[in-house]
Length: 96
Image (cartoon, rainbow, N blue to C red; front, top):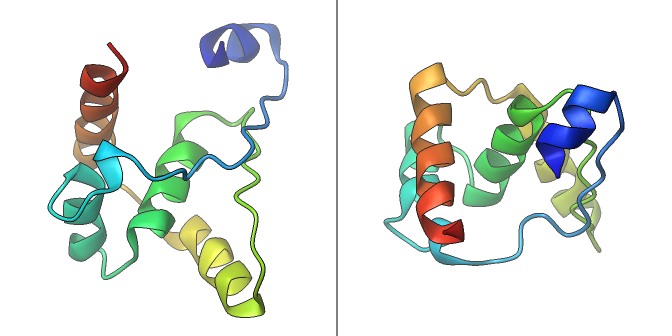
């Protein structure tokens, strides 16, 4: 779906994109990258989503100002191309 939206210039808005799952488990791919960036797994997941497509506007939701600030800080995380590929590959294995 996202690839189609990218090709057609359509915005893609994932609602609650950080739902917990295998990628976010302690010791999992997101957790490992998060530790390397001194960030939370949620921040790395948002950074990964933001790097994935310029047409994507994630809406992670929040109920506290501190959580909002944490989500906003995710935009400052610069994932390396290798980290991005590792996360993409891990997601593919879970989604297939």
